[in-house]
Length: 54
Image (cartoon, rainbow, N blue to C red; front, side, top):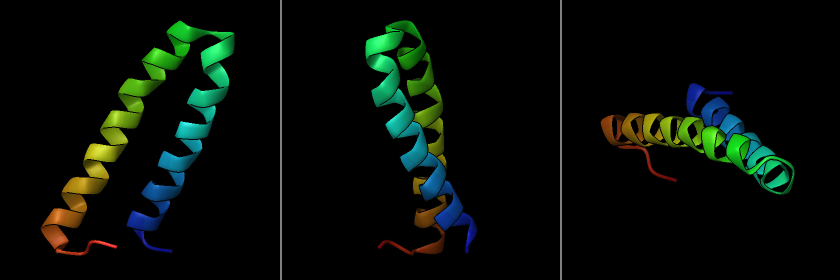
């Protein structure tokens, strides 16, 4: 499994977690969105640098 695959798995997991948190703790869900954005930006930057888009 490549690093990009791992980042994609983490991103997907965080998105599901945020969806679950939205009804339980909206503030926590918003805070998690910051992490989701950072992981997404990292993944995008890695793909831009390597030229690998799925």
